[in-house]
Length: 216
Image (cartoon, rainbow, N blue to C red; front, side, top):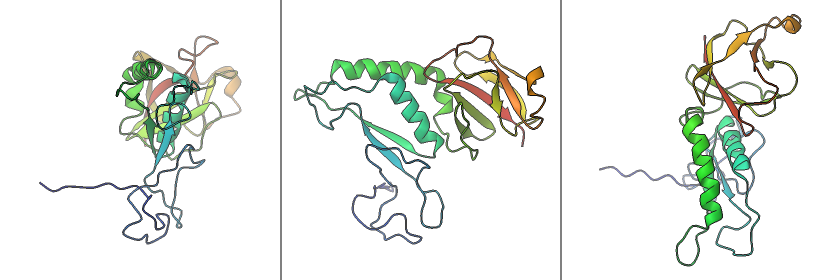
């Protein structure tokens, strides 16, 4: 059986070079930060990357460190990484007995529940090749475009340049059909499509995901 090794860029060299050294690694690994636009090489081409993030402020177990990231923060960090073509490596520091702190278990369980409902917008997805919308982020897999609505804002959710490009839409968490229409107040935006939510509040305050089937 052939063994495949995947190595990060911590051995040295310049992984962003047009022709990186053989020891420069297979992917970039920014630590405790998510790159603003993902990671590209000197030619402006995207390269594989993974953000290394701790669940609190320490890599190892630190009994005094209670500065835990909330499940909402973790979910949004994950979505941000995927929307920029990257992965999220989330560190959990076990105790000296090899036990995961209960605070971590609680946070991860809640993130897992969100993933159970919305995982299709994460697994196998990547950069959608679209500008970041004001209301949130996009991820994409094939003809499935996922609108991660983080901010309800005022009025319908604007999908720039998507008029007549959306075959259907559903709320990913429960499969309910979503309306893609043109309300009366959108007449000045003929090239755009719009999602209309029936309530003033989003169904999921962490990240409401709408799956869009896109016509090419």
